[in-house]
Image (tube, rainbow over all chains, first blue to last red; front, side):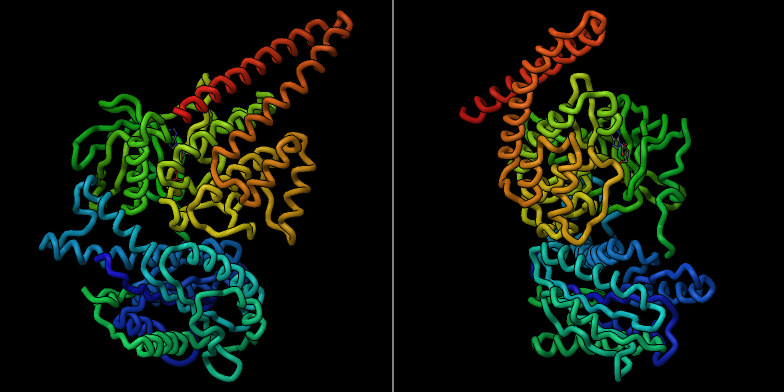
Length: 250
Length: 323
Ligand SMILES: Nc1ncnc2c1ncn2[C@@H]1O[C@H](COP(=O)(O)OP(=O)(O)O)[C@@H](O)[C@H]1O
C-alpha cells in the first residue's frame, strides 16, 4: 500500500452553465472511469442569482459524476476554497483506496467508519502519509467566458497560493492549466505539465474572454491531456478507484 | 452543495440537558452548554462519569480522527501538558447517521484578548515566553503546531498559563502544514513555504503578538516587509519587540528556544530600565497623589515578582538542559 501512486485530479473553476459541445456531466463520468476525479468550484455572481441557480445544479452534477467534490463560493473566498477542495478531493480519493484495502484485509464490506475508534487512528496515519507522499497531477480548467472577467485576478492568486501549499508536500506535483473558450479553439492549453506555477501571471495575461462556455469539450480535452502524459510515461491504468493509479503495482 | 454551514448541522444543535451515549464504550455525556464551534465540529461542556469534560462532536471522521491522533501523541510527550488531555473517543448514533466525538479535559480560562484587557502590557511578552517554551517541547517531539492564532489559545489560572486548545493543524515535521489561517501563515505573506518546521510556528507566534496590538488584523499590501515595519513602529506595545518580531518574520530563528531566550533577556532588560525611573518619580510626587503612588507601587512589586519568577523558571530550565 505504501507504493508511490499518482493522484489525478481535474479542478474546474466556472461561474455558470455550459452552452456548447458535449454534456459536461457525461464527460465527467468518462473521466471518472479512467481514474481521474473531477472537482468543481462554482463562483457565484451576486448580480445574477437566477441564471446562477441553474449553473449551480450543473456544478454539483458534474462533480458527482466525476467522483469529485463541488463547492459554490463568492469570489472573495476563492483562494481558501481552491485549496480546501483540492485537499479534500485528495483525501477522499485516498480514503477510497484505503477503504478498498481494508475490505481486502478484513474480507467484508468494512470501511473506516466500521472500525473501533482505536484502530481508526492507525488507518488515518496511513491516509495522512499517502496524502503527503503520493505524486499529484492537477489539471485546472478555467472558465474564460465574459462573465468571469472581474474574477480572473482572484483565480490567478488562488492558483499561486495552491501551488505554495502543494509544493510544501513531500510528494511531487505537476500542474497543467487550460482555459475555455480559447483564442482560436474551444479549449486552449495555457500551461503544459509543470511543477511550478510561478510564471502564471504571464499565462493569465494571454487569456481573452469569449462568449461561449464549452465545459464538456474542456473536460474531454483534460482527459486527453492526462492520457498523453500517461502514454509518455509508458504506464497504463490499472486501478478502478477514481483519481488514483498505482504506478508501481502491488 | 451550497457552502456547508456547520451551524445547521445536528452536531451544533445539541440542547442543554441532552444526553448522548457512546456507541462503543457506552459512556454517557450530559450537555451543559455549548463552548464554541469551528470548521470541524462543535465543542460542548458536559458532565460524565469522568467528571466535567469538553466534548467535541464532528461530522467528518477523518478530521476528528486526526485530532485524536495528535491529542494521543501529546499525552506521550513526557512531563509536559501540551493541549488538553484526551479522555475518551467514541461515536454518537443519531438516527441513521454516525457522528464521531471525543471527550477531553475542559480548560477553564479566558481568551488572550479578554485576559490582556485588564492586565499590563508586559503580560503579552510573558505569555509569548510560555508559548515559545511549549513550542520548543513540541518541536523536539517532532511536530509543528501549524494553526497558531489567538483563537486557538487560552489563558488558564491563576497561576496564569497559556494553553492551546485546537490541535487540528498540528503536523509532523517536514510535511505540509495541515491547517492554517492567512494572517498567521508565512505563505500568505510571501515569506516562505508551508512546510512544517520550527520557523513556520515562530513566524505565527510573532504574528500572534502583532494581532494582539491589531485585534482586527490587516490584509497584505504591496510591500509586506515595509508594512510590518510600519505596523510595529506605530504600536507602542510592539515597539520594544521590534527586532525580535522582524527576526521571526524573516525566519531567522531556527529553534523556538532561541527566540524564547532572546525574549526573556529583552523582558529582563526592560524591567531593569524602568524600575529605578518609576521609583524616583514616585518619591518626588506630592502627597495628594498617594493613592495613585500606592497603586503603582503594588504594580511594580507584582511585575518584579513575575520577572523574578520567569528568571527562576529560566534558571531551572537551563539547569535541566545541562543535565
Ligand atoms: N478543551 C477545551 N476546553 C475549553 N474550551 C474548549 C476546549 N476545546 C475547545 N474549546 C472551545 O470550543 C471552541 C471551538 O473548538 P475548536 O477545537 O477550536 O473547533 P474547530 O477545530 O472546529 O475550530 C474553541 O474556540 C474554544 O472556545
